[in-house]
Length: 411
Image (tube, helix red, strand yellow):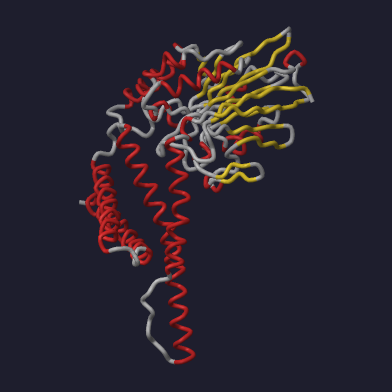
């Protein structure tokens, strides 16, 4: 009964938003022919009916595997609804102005007649401005999700061993293979990765959305990733199956073990609170990898950095793979000042934002202090990769899928 009530409340709110936006549509279309107006009105309420029906269906089938049609339909409807909220803001301004006019007239002349007519200009502006995010989000689904970009970052360290001058490390993150409906995009990504001819390749977590079986169609493709000295990976919060209702703890444990073993069968070295020594010309650096450790939004702390650090204490240069960037302020730069470079992912740049020279903004920055790109504190560096895949919204706007290539230099 509680579920029915909750669904009813949400649908009622959707109806109120659509009813409000309908006022702007009527205002803007008042000079059109009656038949044209009727078609526009029918389309408006048809979209509402589809939205309400889709929401109700999704609520009763929650937990079932999504298919491409459901994902894109739900995302499109959400984009339409979010765009309507922009129109609502303009209508609020219009209402505030009309109410202010009523109060002013009442105080000055005693007039109490409320003007029912809306500002055509504000209604037009609302619909016009709403078209901007609508177009951007639709474009993000059509093009942005697979518009892979290679970012090149040069990092300088005074303690880098001379043998590692010019050493190239490549990072990918947050692949979310369960969101891919075809293997072709990942084949394109793997070809682009291999063209970089990196010495090391790092994957920093969230290989799947929920379950290990999501990875299986892409094993042969991902097995093709090449690096001169190895491919290393760590686990992200989605890899543990925490967002699935399992029949038993054993089933959940088996799912995680399958995910780990499958990565190893692909030639990836999964670091579970461990470290590896990378040697070159008689010198070495260390790569440390921890399980997921989150310091925001209630994410679990599976990682054990003290365990991963053990044995690498005397290494002259250390790289840490840790999925969640909140780990940096939560523990790394407080207790391990000699970890030179931390590589994280997790945020996706929220798959939406403004990312142009001189301006980088996304709503995720209000949750994570470090959320995209390079950060530095003292001698320590953190890089947050915005991810190769996507989850939820099947697209990207502003923060496109990223392959990061680091070139190490001596300062």
